[in-house]
Picture (spheres, helix red, strand yellow):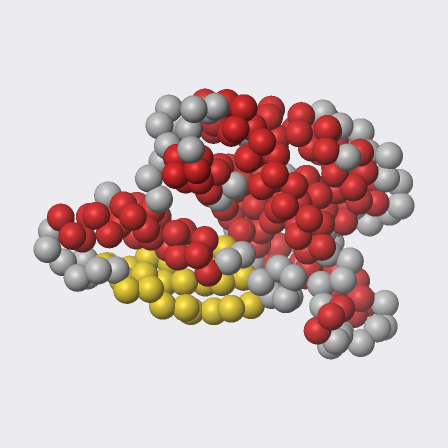
Length: 249
């Protein structure tokens, strides 16, 4: 690993084995797990160090990082969570299942699961990014969890990914006695109850590759602001609303 040298060699390192133990799954292709743990900064650093041009075409930026695995892992998680919710709540319709699903696949929940897995030090991050604390960033941790799910799916199919999801998300799904209210709806109800103008959403940034964009949205309401980041504009607005609701209590 950059900085600590934990994942540099070709054989499974101690941290790869430790992550496998936490996953309860042994990879036949450990290169997939290594890729899932590789932040784009580390992939870029190695590319530049090997003498290749650091400015790559847009289609190649992030090559060697966990971005492609995150792309498929996001879909795997969405499918497995939808399947599980249908089983667990057979009498609920989409209006209740949707908010449950959105919460369980949200960045805060994913980052919390990364924390329980102690993924922070297992991530392969460029030295300057490690010093800046990128390993502790919720979006980086959440992306790594999705990438690991993608790696598990490609290595062993849906079943190992399903077992992991149902073990790692068990506490979160049990805690959902009632469907959570969508943050945008909750924020709108909050301002309307106080006779205030409706929340105002603003796109701050759109970044990332075309297959895995990142939206940063800011929202203002009640004289305060919040900010959220996600892979879609709608989800980023929801995250921004949730952030503002936390700020206003």
